Length: 369
Image 1 (tube, rainbow, N blue to C red):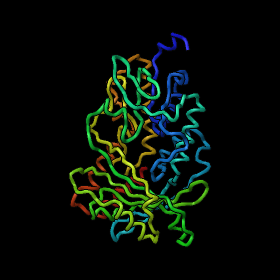
Image 2 (image 1 turned 90 degrees about the vertical axis):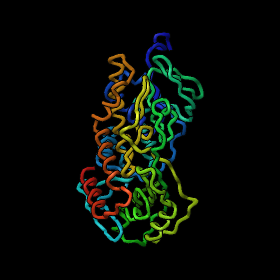
Image 3 (image 1 turned 60 degrees about the vertical axis):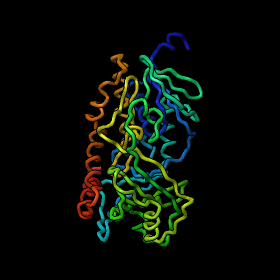
Image 4 (image 1 turned 30 degrees about the vertical axis):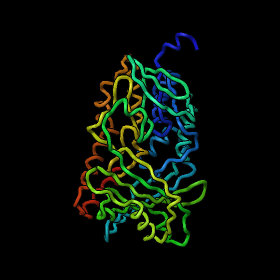
């Protein structure tokens, strides 16, 4: 590399998940001349697991197909039926546009392949250990030290980049997931239906249990899980393992806790900080849907926002990202996050167990998703 190239600004994206790769893919589509400026650092190696229900909304499906029209041709279960449950209330919903359910190990690898096919440098098996801000640059300490002009933190709920931007503590939701083989002895309609069950809110859960049909390595399976938003942090904690046990047992599925995977989810908070000079956060590092924990469509859309911010920084030679907050809240991803923050406050208000209201909120969300 020439000395002139060494002096050019470079952008490091910490995290090769959906938000990080989406950023790079959007930059490649909008400004292919900047692709050589990007490097994604991913601590794992693909394929790698990611606890997630795997539901794709219409927005997520549209963005993914804009990356590659054939990206959802395999490993996808299409679903039109949703069952909303709260206590004794059962509300079936027929979706106008189908949702899709994927296995994140498969999806994330596909999106990473799209990024590398666009010429993006993706370095796998590298852990960013420390980030130090300097004058007009940021040093990233990994297997070697990189000095970059712009750093994008897309490295999840326990982001290494985040402390350089935000001192806000807490804000973590909780999630447990397990995937089991599909049992063919159950009704076909139930086996092809997504279930959102809010019954456990009466036991202090600020969230729901779920049952999603999915496909893993060509085998039909069921993704089970429980999400606890914890948006009201001072309220007593629900017993997630016991509640997930109860939910799966109610569907005649025995549970084996050794197969369970737990994972923190960073809850979006509009009062948080999202950028500092030469640095900004996206995806789980910034915060995702506090109402449902839905992160796929938001991660992909964060990529569109991040790409425009990076391109704007290059065009103006201004990497302060001083206006990132305004850009976030004026972008569709920010507007959606603000809406979902209010939705979470309504759904999980302590002492409020209005089952009808909760399902009405969910039904409205499904119609607009």
